[in-house]
Image (tube, rainbow, N blue to C red; front, side, top):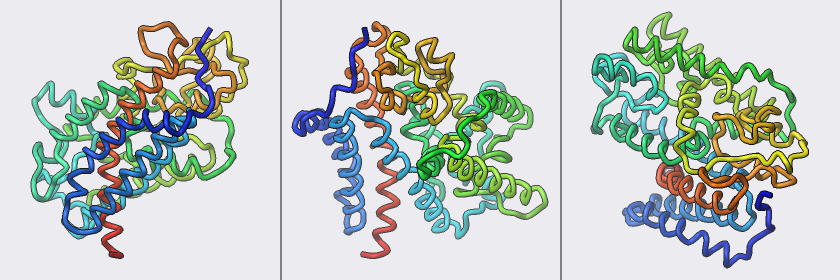
Length: 383
């Protein structure tokens, strides 16, 4: 019999004790910003520190994960493009990047390009992304730093990157949260295979033409970050595709379905991250003896990682991003956190704590710095 997770609200003081490691880690992460001259960076760091600590405290106090994670994740998603575009305009006066600057390696690195870089790097020792390996004055977002950060986070969290670190996912999750009920309640499950097809296609094509194909032609988030300067029919077509995919998959469909449709139906990086689901120490299991089934977990999974077959198998699909939505919504505690290598259902709350300490440490270090940086810019406008 599985150990019940929903044991009710913890006391304030017990929740505070469990939050203490996160408080200390957050103070360490924001210590440099708090010591900077000027009011704006100090205030932004303090607000962000309080924000992440309070959210974690609420996770501990309420035994809910997804609602409080989502507040952080959506804030990250909507603040990231503001700060990113702000920096782009300050550096080069525009969101668009001239071809000459791409050739000179002046493009900020994007983690979505990582799966497309592997084959060319292995076969030809060529880095196909038009960015710099190490930080420069005009391009601080270097390849080496981002790949190293991604690797550490992926080994610890696996697909959890998509729930705690992918600021792009935060944008579509924000739009998916606006409506109270979905207008489109049923999506064809066969669309779940599309990201794998896109992943295979862009990896092979990128190796053949020595160019990150997804970044050049399919990435919806070019619409809110940077894009090639429109100088020809080709670059105009690229811009049109970026904007159309952003409007359709990141705004409209999430509003209608309450799902992360870009992540579920297009993103090759999400499929790539699913391969690393085995590296994380914690996953989610479903106790089939307790399950009714009521379909609440299936209906509330933002990435379509649970269906009837998954419930029967006792675990979500490998695309599960460890957001906790299924665990939080289950009325019978059939969906539980699970430490790999232990009996299914044993130590659900210990598994949740192990997952959250790792995930929140990464979220504070990576996403917290992005939030604080953007807030500092916005606060600087009024103080």
